[in-house]
Length: 320
Image (tube, rainbow, N blue to C red):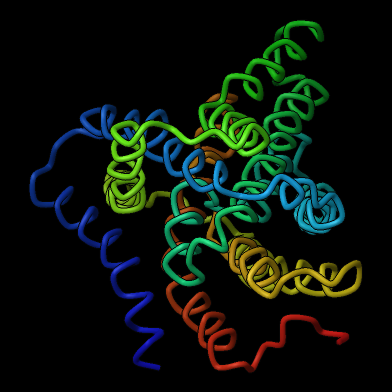
């Protein structure tokens, strides 16, 4: 148990420090802009590129693994979406944001740092694959569903072009594509460039977690959604269980890959869900509350999951 505390404490400790400093200094949320820019456009892309560029190309095309991970995400999304439509008298737009709150985990800010801290560099490829393919679909589903609901006011062609731009120009996806190309060409960057990438990569996790803590602290908890219990259960428990069962059923993947996918599935609601809600003016305050509360609850659920993984209580394949 001491080892688990040693993994989780620094991780959630950075989030806590960000929240504490935000409360003490009382800087406006907008002051975080350059930190977020550094994390999203520089540090995390450097981390993804550096780790993927060293990976054999054949490991980057595990389509059955990608299918299993993405399938589990959309099972959870569909469950929450349908429950919201049928039992909450919510429209398509609001149900979409609820579905994302239950299925879209914090795989950008929290995922890489925790996975690499727990499983080492062997987790880099599954983390990058999960991030890229989940986000490609998330970038597509939000504007598509909002267009169906009437919340998206632009034409179909403009919506489609926006989706393509979001995917093609996202810095994480560009960095991953560049890493794949470097791996295929067996390109080795000059020593000075490699050292710069290493510095940036080392800064990615602490800066991302600190920024996340600041963001959570400066978004007041105003409206707790009625569906919070269901959202938290789906995001923190049902999602990783489905992911684990599906991956166990469809393939015999490396242990680290399975554990990384299950851990990524168990992450709390992504801050992007608030951004999507704010963009369309749908379920905004309750999306913010869902992010905050699932993050707090995940301290317990992630600790329990990591304990089960590291002690061997959770086998790498359910059916083996």
